[in-house]
Amino acid sequence: MAQSQEIEWLLREKYSGEKSEAFFADCKRLSLGEPLAYLIGWAPFLDTKMYLDTKPLIPRPETEFWVAEAIKVIKNSATLPLGLVETKPLKILDLCAGSGCIGVAVAKALPECLVDFAELDSKHLFTIEKNIKENNIEQKRTRAIHSNLFSNTPGSYDFIFSNPPYIDETLHRTDRGVREHEPYVALFGGIDGLEIIAQLITDAPAHLQPGGQLWIEHEPEQSEAIAKQAAKHHFTATTHKDQYGVERYSILVLQ
Image 1 (tube, rainbow, N blue to C red):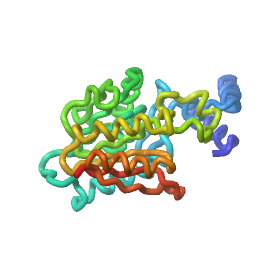
Image 2: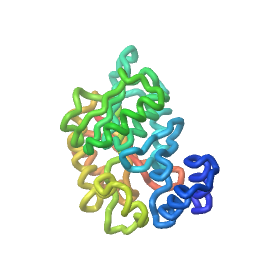
Image 3: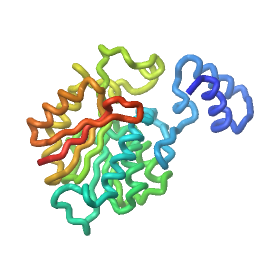
């Protein structure tokens, strides 16, 4: 979005068209690289409105794309995990949840599902719970869990969805505004951007039902390494492109 469009959005959404002193102060912050979503306090994500009170990672269109695909897969009974008993509600985990955008969008689209949210930074649990409430998701269907990956997640799941820290700092692709304002631990994934992803793939089989699926967002350069790691842990992996033609996510099915 061009900065002129961002200013128009800011004026409309936060200030109802009134060019106040606070508005001009926010315009200055915008010009210095502060993300628009943090200034207005929320971001759209599929059919949800995601509040960003504690400044978690801002939801991205690329993530929207594959989450929409995941929702289609779940709705199609022919592609449900092997051995799934259809009379039981699906159990879904949003891992490295941040704002909770993935889990909230899935819970809203699939009202019979049970959705857990696992997040390392405890302050973001407030934002997750707010987004559950504000998007009219039944709270009894959800749990927001303070967890370092799977450290505190109970039971096993039919689907695990994750947008983990995966950026490789050596690629220098991250805009200054992102580097300076969004949470470092939610962005950068260590050596080759793969440290968290490798741990996630290693640990996931113990937390998935037979035939369960693990969906992971990642960089295109990581596709081959993810497929190799997946094979070591009894997954078959397929990599898929996003709306921009970039390899952006992999689906791992537990054998």
